[in-house]
Length: 126
Image 1 (cartoon, rainbow, N blue to C red):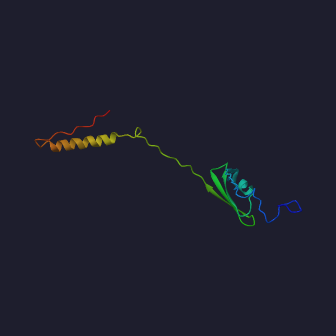
Image 2 (cartoon, rainbow, N blue to C red):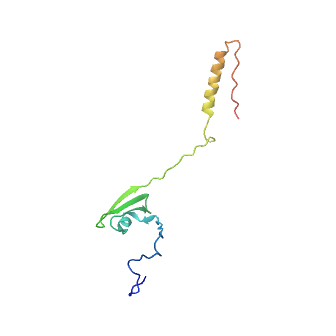
């Protein structure tokens, strides 16, 4: 129902906007700065914080502002994580094979006194 001014009456809701939910996607990006001066120069709103990636050194700057927009900048170093991929082909088993052969020899020598003893078969090297 319209009143005389051409606008909808305040007692009737506008049904076009009801039931519609707006989805906001949060945009995430990496902000890059040049050193501490770049981190200090980055403008921010009051009561906010951000991580700034330094392009000149492995440093991340945490910049926070208080209610009066007074900034505090703290630097943290970044160290990459190196994973060691060990494969079975790169491991040297020669020391282990020597120990096993010595144990087999000692075991066979000890059992040689028995009449029904059978020697242990050795591992064939390939």
